[in-house]
Length: 194
Ligand SMILES: [Zn+2]
Image (cartoon, rainbow, N blue to C red; front, side, top):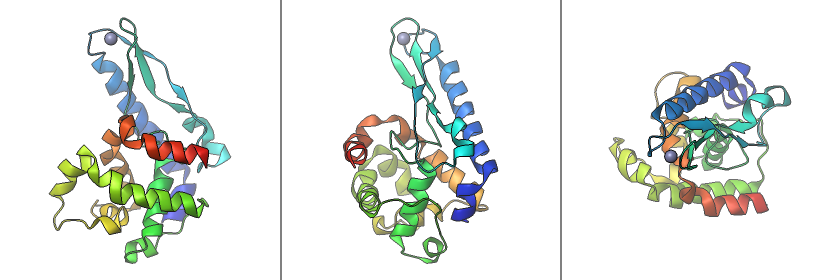
């Protein structure tokens, strides 16, 4: 299913649609100072998206306040922080790399991610991710509890529905992480240097 999702234009369209909805909600919420939010998207050059779908993945939706100039970036299911690979590639490739169960074994990814990047992602899931407020809060509500060693394959299995519903559900659940730069900064520096 991984292979199919990474090549499925309907899945890319779905992710873009979800991000547009998240951006609209963010903009409607306005700035903390009550100022209006104007579009100030970040340009992106992501890896892991076929050339024909790239146009929908070249901008990260973000806003700038018309009054205080403070930036507000919408949560995203397309991008996991500032990583150069799409969020779906990070999750699916990491799941395959975890290789801890049948679900992960079934995953076959179309995007070739360098081994050292996969190793860095594994460290991120098992160390930085489990220290995030998201995991320490909502992550603790999964029953039975999830073993960090199996992340994120075991986490993906807890979302219900078909492959599209499970992956989009997990990406949506990870949303708070996509706007918390501090959680990702160290790992990103390494990734961009690679
Ligand atoms: Zn403001």
